[in-house]
Image 1 (cartoon, helix red, strand yellow):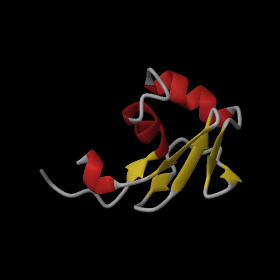
Image 2: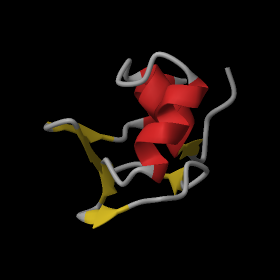
Image 3: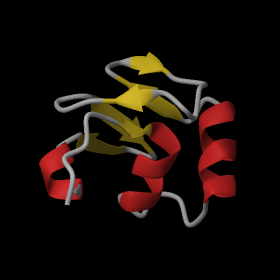
Image 4: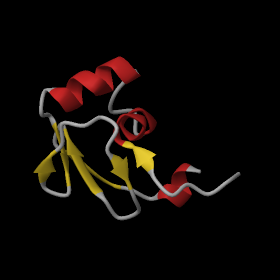
Length: 69
């Protein structure tokens, strides 16, 4: 499998099973429910890289692209 340089925020939320669908991920992001590296992120296409910290619904996730590929 090719290695990933990044993953988009909405795809990451689906991978982590925080959002059941892309539509749900979009709503979560656009309503300000998601933080990336301590900042509220309103762009669902935000590119996440290794080590980025995503906080949503009281859960914290550290991006590890090797685990996702």
